[in-house]
Length: 452
Image 1 (tube, one colour):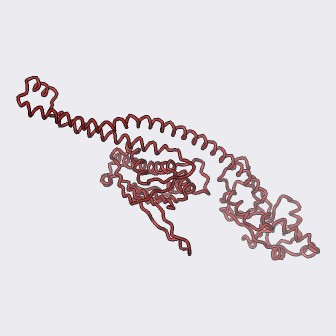
Image 2: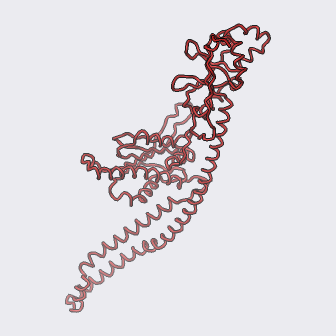
């Protein structure tokens, strides 16, 4: 080989990478690539001899004056050489002349591109270009060639990993669903057992209140007819503190009535939360659903968080009540956790400038309309549930994690409660779940459910 040819063609270098440690987020850097650059002034016959010496090379990277010009694959070079009179035509020609005939559209990707994304790009190419190698640009602006077969092998391996992960997730989800279904039935049975004595107390409190009032009237009538009561009766009145008893009896009955009513609402909310959905959705009162979730979370609020309700006149929405309760519980838990963490932080740091702002959650429900912007298509009507807090807001990283859990393109290793909520609203109910947060202002979750 001549010294001139040696200066025009660089020694091919293969970067070796193992497929044993590929993951769902692996990129092109982890695959074997060929670093082989050829100057455009090199002759075709010299390049053909060099490709014969290295049969694994998928092609060559063309360089002109030290800069990247393009790529010619081994397949394209062989196509021109096996044509009639091909060897005579290109034997003494240089690569510039060959490239003018053999130039094709190349796929140029940065080395940080994930393997699955790169595979999607290759599948979008025309069939005749599919076997062509991929040009990979490194961070140092050098260019390497990736054989399409190596990419296919890695992509299929990752698909196998993804299938295994999905299978394990589905198995875990089935076990979790069965566990939650059994727990729901258990809670529903316990709630029924609690409701029976509560109903008994609730029903009899009205009669007890009436009977006590009648007895007090009878005692008052005796006092009028017998103004000179005996010493024994006067002593007994003083011993039982009759005046205080007469005044406090009504308050005690009212308190018992309030406690029984609260217990009844709490158990009913627990039943609704553990409700096992049927095959078809049913009309649900959205405002009542929100009230039930707030009642279940009341023990965590402890008066530290103010709940502001701005309920609108919302018609019943056809949905799966148990799943809707799960979504509301997930969102409220996320919001309450953020507010309580901030309250604790302020308490330790003694930030007086922020202590005056009481943690607050504003809940708004309303019916909204969205214009179709298409002829002969009616406007859509939605029930909007807005949950806004005055927390310090989330960082961009935290917001990205939540939005990634919403995305179907992202493959999170751990299923989050907000990700489950997003799929329940969008896939199961045909609705929308939006999230936004601003540092120093707060966060907002907005649920849109379609009205048929």
